[in-house]
Length: 80
Ligand SMILES: [Zn+2]
Image (cartoon, rainbow, N blue to C red; front, side, top):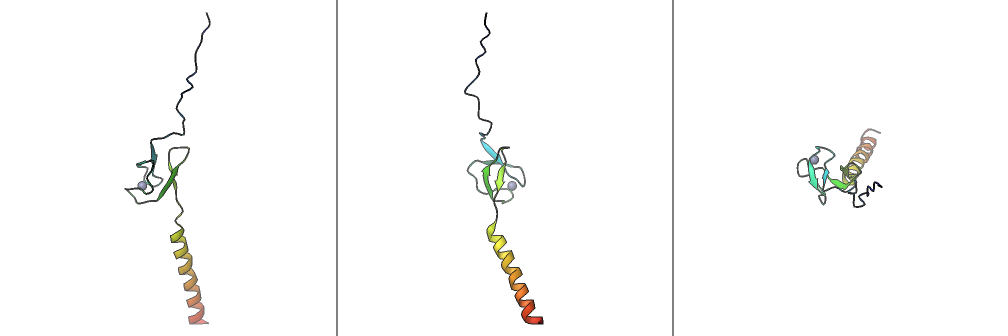
C-alpha cells in the first residue's frame, strides 16, 4: 500500500498578510494604510516579516539641510 501524502499545493503564501505592523509602535494596521493612526508614522509596503516599511521623510531632510545651510551662511555673513 502506497502512502500517498498529497502535498497541499494551495498552501498559503507566507508573504501574504492581512495586516502590517507599524515599525514604531508595532500596532496592527490595514494593508492599505499609509500612516499609523496611533503614532502618525508614515508607513510603506509590508516586508517579509509582516512589518510595514518606514518611509523616508524627504521633506524633513530638505528642511533640515536648508536650515543648516542658512545657519552656515548667516554665521559667515555675521562674523567674517
Ligand atoms: Zn505606529
